[in-house]
Image 1: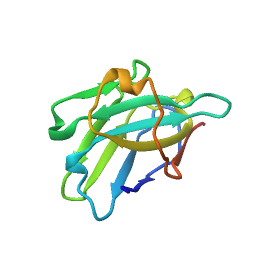
Image 2 (image 1 turned 30 degrees about the vertical axis):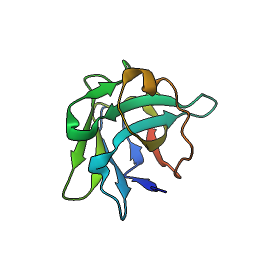
Image 3 (image 1 turned 90 degrees about the vertical axis):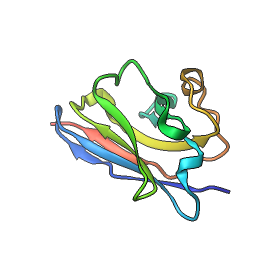
Image 4 (image 1 turned 135 degrees about the vertical axis):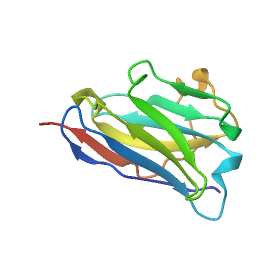
Amino acid sequence: QLQLVESGGGLVQPGGSLRLSCAASGFSLDYRAIYWFRQAPGKEREGVSCISTGDTSTYYADSVKGRFTIVRDNNKNTVDLQMNNLKPEDTAVYYCAHESYCSSGRLLTPTFGSWGQGTQVTVAS
């Protein structure tokens, strides 16, 4: 079973940037669509972004459009989430997941079989 590991979280001031990474070992992420989700305390898990195989499609939640960018780094075998102009409401644990396709509809349904440990992002002054 493909296991994904998230990293790159931390504490950042509003307006700052972070770059999260979703990594896999022993398997090329090129063959899977990759999703980023997040879960804030007391809230349901929500979709943030996804990228299709071949990088032909990307989708973003309205709340992050224009601020977040999802990219593949084939050299590192990661899918990264570049987060700019961070806001306190972006504070959450961020998770990645894989699927055979990337769609805006799938972003709305965080029903994946398993999740990694996630990486904490805290935006505060």
